[in-house]
Length: 115
Length: 114
Image (cartoon, rainbow over the protein chains, first blue to last red):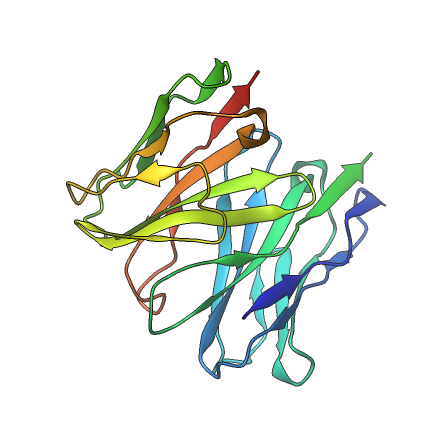
């Protein structure tokens, strides 16, 4: 069975600091997809990124970047120069191919960015 | 606009009073599912459907029912709600294989069972 661990329950930073959210996953499958979702205080889930297991290239999107390392089964998310609007709960998730599209979520990391 | 809609968005009810949370998507997705979100537990899958008339249990199906009579709709039914079903519920839709696209989530339904 697959599992996603987000060991950081809550992180507080001051605006403009960089922050990294950790995600460690477990699966025996060789083909899988990893995701990050953002849940702002309003409650909806906002898709941020999808990465398949064969693509280990890091990705950057504006202030967001993702570091995927299969050797350590990690898919970490970094926000550069954090802003108050980044305050949210962030979820890492995993899904396998061949048998549905079930997402296995981590427990989430609450990020608080203060002025 | 491509979207997943859920109704109601908020609901307060009492133990034992049957309720239905509706979910509808306009993207012609085969796959639909329900998740519940609880503090410290993340989101957990309740039920899913691979296509019309095909449904199966997720990780936490006890106390819930679903049906998939039409491709676009996937209602979640609580026949006899109990306080431990107080939670934030999300409906999601997508293709059967994650390689095609990410899943789309509805706005959530916050349910309180007294």
